Every structure is written in C-alpha cells, then in structure tokens.
Length: 251
Image (cartoon, rainbow, N blue to C red):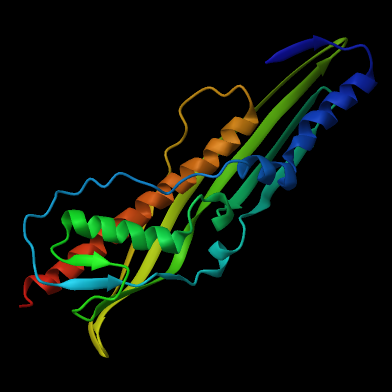
C-alpha cells in the first residue's frame, strides 16, 4: 500500500484518474501480445518397439476455426468505480481470446511436424509429409482451437485530510486452452478411420512477484499458449495410437 501526503485536490484527482485509466482494452491487448511464444513441447511418450509395414502420408492439417485464424481479442467483461467522499474503489475484468498472431509457429505446420515426430517415437508406422507407396493418407481438420482467459485489475484509494493511500493489484482468473481435431485415415477413396479427438488444459498461473504489470500480462499470454500446446500434444498422441491400432492388424 502507498501512503503519501496530499497538497491539493488536483493531486488527488490526478492520481485517481491515472490509476483507473490503466484499464483500457487497447493497452491491455498491447501488453498481452507483446511477446510471441512457441508451441514446442517435450515428446515424452514411451518409445514403441513394434514396427509394421504401414507407411502414412500426413497431409498438412487445415485450421477451420475462424476465431483462431483472426488476431486475438479483448473485451471488458466488467468495469466499475465506487466513489465515496473518503474512499474510492475500482476494478476491471477482461475476457481475452488467444489468436494465431501470438504464436511463433504456423499451427497447421506445427501439428503436421509434431505428428510425424510422435509417430517416429510411439508409432508403429512410418510417417512423412510426402506421398508414400502404401497410399495411406492421414487428413486432419482443426475445427476448434484456442484459449480463453480472464484477467482482473482492482484497487482502492483512501483520502483523509492531508494524506491519501492507494493500492492496486492485477491477476489471472479462470482460463482454459482447448483443441479439437477431426481426422481421417484413408486409402484411395476408402475411409479406414474417421474420428474426433479433443483436449483441454488449464494454464499454470505464473508463480512469481512481478516488478511490472506488463510482465505479468505477457506471461499470462505465454501460459495460455503453453496450455494450448499440451492440448494439441494430447490430440496428436491419441491420433498416433489410433493409427497404430489399424496398422497393428494390417498385413
């Protein structure tokens, strides 16, 4: 809490306006998206010792979620000021939607590459991005992907005679990353597998003391992307296991 001696109501008004004006969506969005974060994750599934004759072409996935293709967005879910003669309280809550602009990689290319890498680890089939001799093609549509996060800012201001005190804090509320993939394994015109996988992950709340709200806001965005990475990881591993199931019983 900050305590200071006030010389005039002009100073008081300037402090209140200066503190509460920090709640604009434009400045919040600029701080949140100031740093791009990678989707890269650690492949930690147990390596497969079985090998089959299956060769699969992994076509580049298609992202059809329009909310993710666009840049991220912010809206003010709640904003209030409670003015009293000697006490003023204020607060804002932002709803933030992650967009592709905050991510280092192209999501479709990342999923294609990560699936090929995962298949080399836990798969029993050979995967590549180019056409194979076996005519097996894996097609993926990412029709729901992204992350939603809530961020709050609140504070108070007390004025008494010739002194005033104020305090403010920012933090992260409920947030969730999600991904859903529709995938199809076909051989020519024959559909062998047609299914959907989906996953959700809550981001880890940054556990540190920040010297600046801008750093916390940037880490908030990074935490959402890391949670999204885990959601994609889950789906990729599930798809590899489903293709394993087909290849295991295919001569």
